Amino acid sequence: MQRYFVSSEDVKGNIVTIQGDDRHHMANVMRFQPGDKVIICQPDESTHIGAIEHIHVEEITITLLEELDEQKELPITVTVAQGMPKGDKLELIAQKGTELGMHALLPVQMDRSIVKWDGKKEAKKRARLEKIVKEASEQSHRTIIPNILPLISLRELDLQQYDYCLIANETEAKQADHSSTFREVLGKINKNDQILVIIGPEGGFSEKELAFLNHDHVYSIRLGKRILRTETAPLYVLAALSFYFEEWS
Amino acid sequence: MQRYFVSSEDVKGNIVTIQGDDRHHMANVMRFQPGDKVIICQPDESTHIGAIEHIHVEEITITLLEELDEQKELPITVTVAQGMPKGDKLELIAQKGTELGMHALLPVQMDRSIVKWDGKKEAKKRARLEKIVKEASEQSHRTIIPNILPLISLRELDLQQYDYCLIANETEAKQADHSSTFREVLGKINKNDQILVIIGPEGGFSEKELAFLNHDHVYSIRLGKRILRTETAPLYVLAALSFYFEEWS
Image 1 (tube, rainbow over the protein chains, first blue to last red):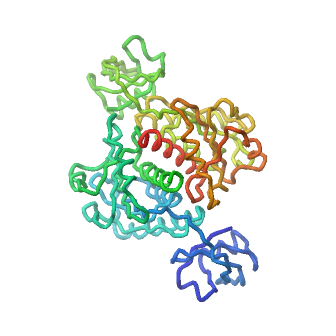
Image 2: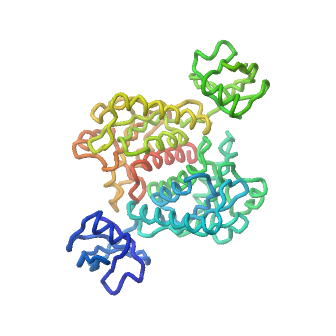
């Protein structure tokens, strides 16, 4: 069943009003008729089956029927702090990260980031990323849409806000001998913990950045024995966290 | 150190001759000079440090110095049988799969595959995929280049050739109650086993295909609680296998 995310203003009692892109999608892409059913996801993470009532030129009204008891979210909250990568890699991370259960994407200007966003560019890029995560949330059957956080510099990162911070440092992969840190830190994480995954850009972290991140709840983990590209690393971490918390435990 | 894969004809004793694209890359992109060092990977999976001797217009000669004892490969052999996806998704799978340790990519024409390759198109697409996996092997520090196998239909799949076959079936993700099959099957896999990961195209497997795959060493696994796109599913499986065999065990 097709899934739509609505904002709280769209819902009055058990009636939902759909406008804009979603109205277009329902009427012209899905060609829904009155009586057809959809899944409506609200910001409070509740999900309902809804029946389409009226299809107008400007809006579609839907009546909420039964509430669904869906558990689609990772049992931990994962924010990906991504060193600004080149090209459209941030879009790939936004889409795949959403499928893999990421809760928030935090673009971080790092010393070796080549791309820079100015104010106007950031607004446009954020709008594009927000569209991507919304669509990916619908397709992957999430019950929330990941947050696209405002761009910050690495030194603005509030590490204390998170229970555990994981950094994927390329030099770890090159070491034949490693300390199984990923396994160890997973053993410490509890359900509902806030996890920050910090990924360097193409050139990796600078020495200054590694010094800033040398902190007692920042764990340097290895992601297998090969060198991953910057956009592959967060997907590995998310898949491993999903595997560990959803398929292993 | 930059890594290059050579064929056995390129090596005579401890002298390697580099021509074509790799010669161009060494001379014009990396701007190497005599005495500079590179890593040379041979088809027998041996890797050596090599010193550049002569840079000619047509070829570069390299002397092999010490052999490296690198273990960069997954302890199991993973072939991804990918239902032909749309657009350039097969290229994404080839690149990211290589980073994540895939040994071979087997494109499979499935009932719901929209894309079809004719003979001429297949040759061109294979050449492109081979270039992608070669470059990704160099960048990710693999010691082998994954094989791009010829396109087959699902019914030509020789399941007996593999120790374990895993299929990621979308309906598993939708079931709240699942049997932890992924964990169970991992417990059975031994080092050096041959694993086949079978992924459906955008529309999933047909009923006929699921009947064909209903076989005693084919395990239907869940990849977390969300619905993954066809190109994300093999990356999840590879990351989980890497995590389990390289970071957990």
